[in-house]
Length: 279
Image 1 (cartoon, rainbow, N blue to C red):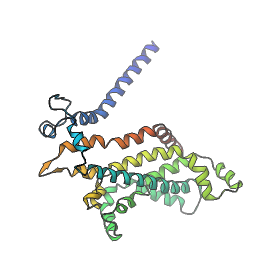
Image 2: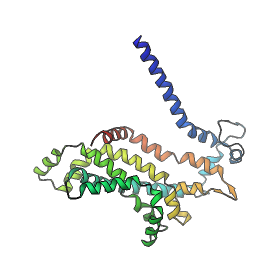
Image 3: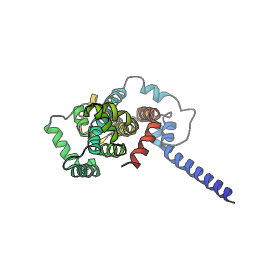
Image 4: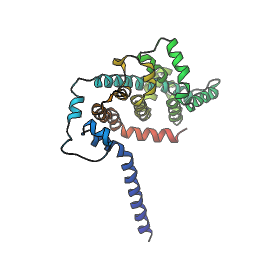
């Protein structure tokens, strides 16, 4: 009787899992099917699973890769910003998280409370003072203006601090006895132990950077410096919508995040689990 109940529960969980996965993938499936239809059809009928073999073709993708539009300029800009943001935010946030986790100093709890407070404030709420500060620093219409607010992330500091709190300080003491400097302890001892957390936060921060829309739209004024989300949104205008490039470009925009996640999938699960339970 018990085995039958367990089997029923397993089947029920499997069905629920399939339904949830289908609902998550539904927008992507609709987008992919629609990318083979002419943009005019999409304007009339919207996204659907209907496949019209007479009018479906690779025309949208051929147009995308023709080089006659600035799509790949936006693509390279976003890729460049994503790599820089991930590298800088991981390095700087890990250093701060390491300090909070492994060292005792005055006002430590107060300063960490400030980090938690900033983490709870939505970025949109501080967008106006951030914009004024960016103007005063002369960073409008530059990539430094986009990057500076995102190179030290409170959420990453919190995660690294939680992750490192689970590592015994005996590692530090042993390294000091062996004559390793404080800088050497971080680089040669801690960084190898932090690989899962770097992978998890690298994927998280990469997705944040790749999908960032509002702040690059406010800061960047030159069309050749525009990022991919802003460029794609600019294809919809009051004078005509270029759905042909928009729909195919949106499909192709998934590729970098997909590659990032597939490459670091195992590290991502280990890192998120460790960061969530230690501390």
